[in-house]
Length: 143
Image (cartoon, rainbow, N blue to C red):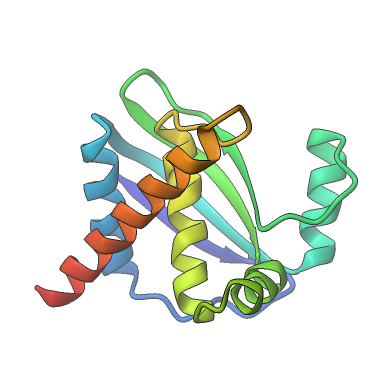
């Protein structure tokens, strides 16, 4: 397992890397997966918009883009996260920015585990898994 945190045009968020790694490993295991190499690239809205245009042909802002390099059982990928959008989404849903960042961090992992959120009923399933994962993070905090 190798998890990297990189900042592009923003300050790296204050994360407890060992706690996040433990959490990601636990969530992946719940889905029958093991963690390979994951890279989180934290950025601003302009960086994620350029990434979205260049690699996906999408002309809009988003909170996360997940590039999946997983094999059958081992998850691997690069996840680009806009801290600007995470912060504005936190305000919209009435969440703390840190909690919303955790939700987005695990959202990418869930995608790598094979959970989608674009088709009918899939968004609700994704949200259910996100909420379960956030509960697991609270359990790790309590250890």
